[in-house]
Length: 191
Image (cartoon, rainbow, N blue to C red; front, top):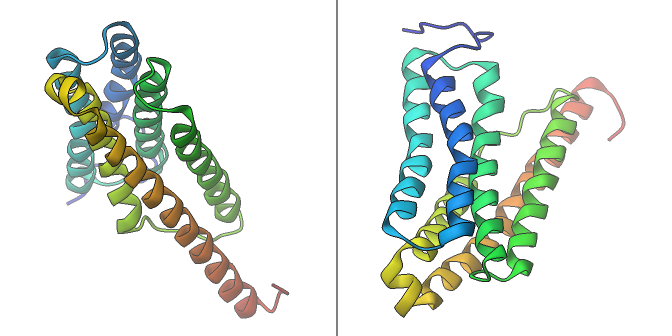
């Protein structure tokens, strides 16, 4: 049973999301300042895993419009921030990080644009998979033994996430185009 209505702002799920946003700059400062360490890795894992906790709380207590906006924003700040911090340290090349950032910004703008036209593009499993692979890439880069002895593992995960990032972005564009065309035909508007 839902405890909060769709317009609620102060909810347990939003509290977890806001904590993730608040601790993201701390993590990024540690990544830039010290790089791979068990403490930084533990903080990364905790922040990345908190996304699952706020999702659980949202399902249990009721989803809200504010949560639907804040949760993906917090995810993007955390993951993109970590990728940029690792690129600033020279762990990741800037090009794959820029590709991921460009996709995230483009998709956010696109989803907002089609949303104002009454089209909702639900999250796909492929997009969730790309987020997990991005998180694994960051985790591998922060895991001291992998960072020292197998930096290629983080690089491989990063490039795999670039492929998933591009393919899920194309899927979203196609989904939005199909949904808009379907809506335009139903309303008699030209597509």
